Length: 303
Image: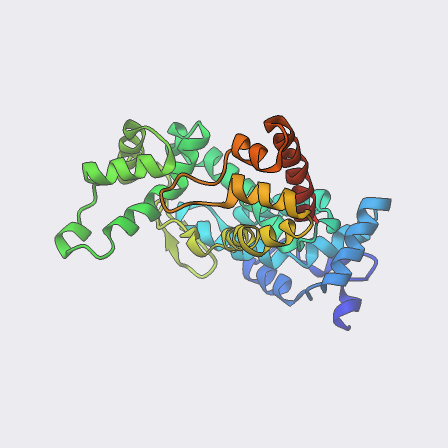
């Protein structure tokens, strides 16, 4: 059976074993072929326009390996990988349902958010220790404290590295970075380093044992973060330059003076009144030109 034929059978789900050994499932999904950008776009349009379930199956099947890869980042919580994969698959199906191929983004980038969101919710509901994580900031603290703690210890002397608790300066740094209270950092640190978790270590099919508390994934090189950073850099550089090119000379100069110019004395560009005096119009007219120019630029950036 060819790669394309594998995903065009009447029942594509029959290719993935529903029960049995987890290794067999992972091996099966890793053999499923990936869709090209054209195939993905075509399937997404058929799903959106006519509710084609076969197209939905193709999109889901081709990204099951992504769920498996993401689930490995959360093995340290002591929860079965099979359950993490199951919840991640729910997130993947939600992403497929909402995916818009006309946005110019591949499904792999869009689906990561939904897969991680479902896995996060599952962990928060099933790890008794996380009762403190009720707000958005506290959840962010829960999922980032351990990786931040190890980042702070990196490069310190041996005595500091082996110290389990955070210093006052480190607590203040974590609270500031994650926008939570100092007391919340202390409480979460205590709960994460304490022994009040009644979870037994889980044993997977390979016989390896995972304790309830382990290292959290470092998302500094996480694909969605990298893509977002590249997009911001693109908009701040070439994107702004292209947007400026759609303006007439007067509108472009007004935008540059008002928003893009920084003098050596940090005083910025010209004011509305200074520009009004130069062009012989009112300050309100300059403001109207500026508003119209910004609308044109936003439209140019969106395309």
